Length: 462
Ligand SMILES: *Cc1c(COP(=O)(O)O)cnc(C)c1O
Image: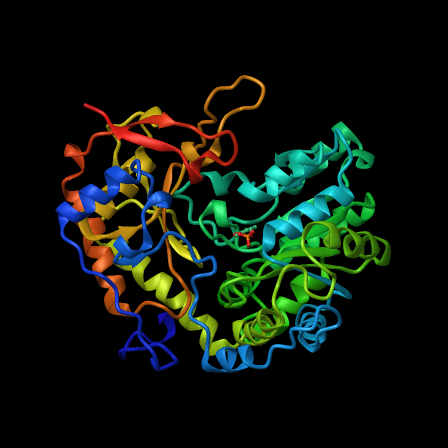
């Protein structure tokens, strides 16, 4: 940990149960990679040694959460666990009304359908894949209003998740507030490399949007991590509790969608939370069509209980300091090897700058996809592409969208891996970096229509 550099530091928990992992050799991995079409999403998890594909649903639950799983009230309607979850969300996040969903995208779907009309503009601090798609499917168009620094992987801005209020104001002038139902704000912006938004910026945004009667919808998937960064980087918050900062963030917004598979430390679950009764009424009605009754929303009672406890654990100081601290540890180590990474180091993962690492590969040879494949081949580490494959195609021209950021994300599950695992990861990244000139690019051989990065297949060039 940063504050305690002089002494060794370890995780604030001990391990009660272990899950053995299979050790593979390079030949095994080559075969597995070919079968997976060089797409790490298509690998069997059994063939993976250290799985850094995502921090979504991959957390280790605590003994308290597991104990809560035995306290499930599996009644179809009015489960005790729903009321416990509802109260936890109200207490910790402050939103008035809660609709549980099976995961985050279901909440996005419902809220987008309720709030967006055909032709609407949805400004946001960088897109997220499922969020943007649901906005588009509801007839809206997402417009990125994040500060320019967020697109520059070398810029050390402490709050790269900030909204450029001038860009937003111009957008309001151009389209009129009547065509902007809400601003879509993510805390700890995933696609920018896990970069936080500052409280100051959020307050400025609140003022501007209130003036125009525009709502703020909060993608609060990683709100605890964002709050921790505010505590460590923003003046005036040094001594604040993370739980209080989380609450302050939520209080500046009108509604939220949550994938509880991230910060909230569960393997499945999510919710929609709003302050407006009318929106709640409509959401509560819609959830019955798509997810299940409004007191379970596609979840078992036990899942809701584990989520309620996960929410309380997610804002504990020791937990969040260790969680973000482990990510910083890995990032600093990779940085010391001279490997180009996104700076500052994010909160949920380390983002390798594949474009700079594999400079000899043009973007249409998918440098980040290539790097993810090489990492798996070298050491059985599974990472995720966040570049041209994830960005998809321009719906009008049909061309690839070429994002400035061509990254490989090493996403760290919460409470799962040890510091020794992080060392193995850093060394493997260094190994590929040393031999980078020998790496050849990929060509796409199969491309699905939606969210192509999940199922696309590739072959090595030359
Ligand atoms: C994961 C994620 C979502 C979608 O949530 P799911 O639970 O995967 O459906 C939305 N927004 C952000 C920022 C996410 O990281």
